[in-house]
Length: 392
Image 1 (cartoon, one colour):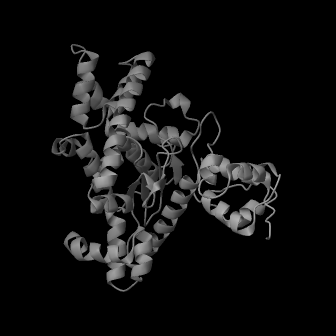
Image 2 (cartoon, one colour; image 1 turned 90 degrees about the vertical axis):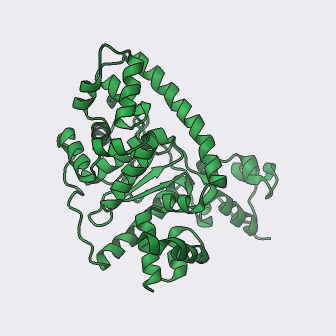
Image 3 (spheres, one colour; image 1 turned 60 degrees about the vertical axis):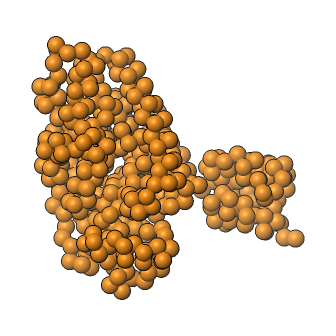
């Protein structure tokens, strides 16, 4: 039997990158001791074993034959930083970014082929422009105003309407917690919360919906700021992080724009009453602005209505509460929720309708169109028959 001379150090890197233990990789495959032997260079796998190993690690087999660990490059700028270092990228993270970039490229060609016009707001500002000016421009363009807040029943409803406004303006908004439709490959909030592709014809925002919905409104606003600044990039816009904790100037600007977009300083200070308790003020502001308490806590701290100690304690408690509550709700929704709602959320109504229109018109095959949406051709046909005509 032919043995494959894989490189132990590369195998070690691939195992670490996978996020799986040796035991998990070896399960239903080989003895864990044998896998450790390959890892230490004591022996080599056979060709069938090497192929199965590469499949489990989700990398091409030739990578395991390299002399050195490969440098994985992402197709768009990575702006995430932790302690001045860029976090490692998991296979799920890399696959998601690459998949979305491919789909955005298709959509861009589709828009141009159908005489779509360049969107004037993309790259309208630069990162050095006044953040209040940028926030005001986004708010005006998308009509994220008092009327929208009054029409929203809750901050969850506000998030849904906010996304609809962005899509109506020509921005594709995808939200997913897994790689495409593979529920076994979950995305990590610790790795990233979102990214934006700033393109004149096909701007796109991706939100990691593994994060609590309470924070997704802030992520959406942050990524929209990227588009208005004409700056493509991967972000991890945690509302809990203060300006001093962000090492990338662009990310600082986008965070400030997002906060001002959602909770304008002038209005916030006008609503805050010194005759009310902090708790009463926070609750009133969250209700008025239709955003979660996490965003309100951030603004209260910025305007010195809370001490740093109060902010850290309160925001950590709120984030843990939302995260625990919504993880349960998300898992329940993924198991028993409406398939079509999840389908549209993951693929974006705008992108889905573009693909469905192209397939219906015979401009792309149903097989290719279905692949763009991560479903089978029969599922796409069912969507077109049941929903597409009524949505147009």
